[in-house]
Amino acid sequence: TVTVTGIYAVTVTDAAGCIGSANIKVTVDCSEIFFPSAFTPNGDSYNDEFGPLPYTALSTLREYKLIVYGRWGEVIFTSTDPFIRWDGTYKGKKLPTQVFVWTASYKQKNLQPFFEKGTISIIR
Image (cartoon, rainbow, N blue to C red; front, side):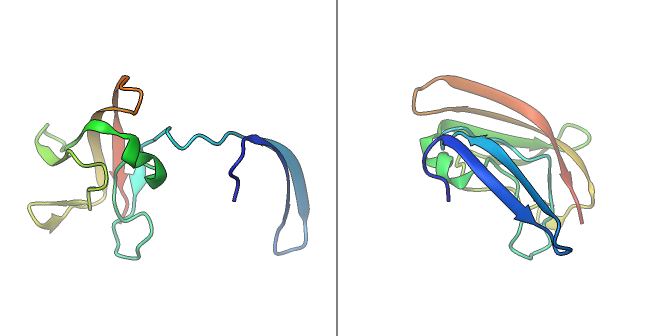
């Protein structure tokens, strides 16, 4: 676990015994968030919901609003709590594999306003 910004030496060995190494710069900044481009709501507890990541930064968000839109512009999901995430359903029904549009607005602890938009794919 990296807790301090710096340059770290990384060595990886694969199953065949091949070794690779590199020096990488790691910046520790838990305030930056991102939205993934796909999720797999299949109930395996991995990548089952859509929303901002990483969880460690979510408590810094203020005036948060996430909206997910369907193919025809209908609102599929909305949340004003960054810890409440979309599970890939609409009106209680699982939606099929397809692409949705989302928008998010929020402020972080420095109160700078952000507006982001993108697409999210459900993979079933």
